Image (spheres, rainbow, N blue to C red):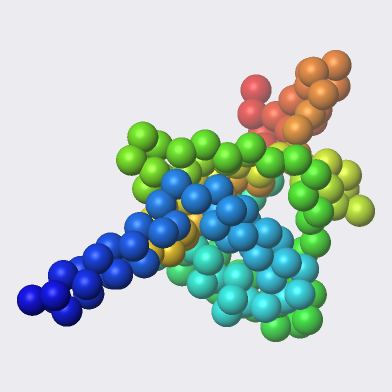
Length: 157
């Protein structure tokens, strides 16, 4: 009986150790950017939940995990991923600590600063990315100029 109680206690501690843990979420997000830069597709994609969605900067880039996996694996097979350096990050948790959402500012040497936002959820005892949204913020003073160009690009009136 004591062994049974001890096992339940230890498994509860192990299982709940990452719930509401900002360091664990930071680690997943840091690894996301590291594995992308190192073109390690398997490790990169393992950070996503099975029902994950990735939104890229183009309006057509809404990828369910399988489609994103195909794209990322093909791209990284060339030895080239994508490199973003995290400059700032904010993490928030649901009341039960099993869902986290974040926003971060990233820097890319070629394109400049981006914003990443998303959601992570507990899958078993691990944090997994359920949604990631990468966007290129447009300064308000430039918005109308670029909005017009984007409308023309997409053939919108």
